[in-house]
Length: 51
Image 1 (cartoon, rainbow, N blue to C red):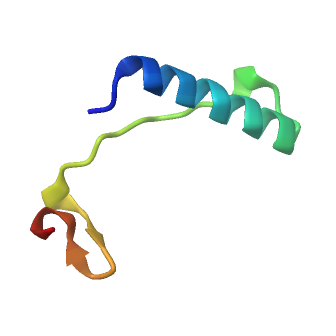
Image 2: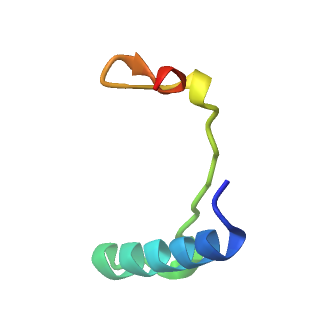
C-alpha cells in the first residue's frame, strides 16, 4: 500500500483540482481510496494477479 503521506498529498491535490475545475467548495468533495486486491480486477482482459 502506498505510504500514508503520499496518499494525503494525493487527496489534497485532487481535491484542489476538482474544486477549481468544477467550481465546487472543497468541503463538498469526498474522495474514497479503496485498495483493490490484484486477484479482483483486470486490465485489458487479463487478471492483474497473472502479471
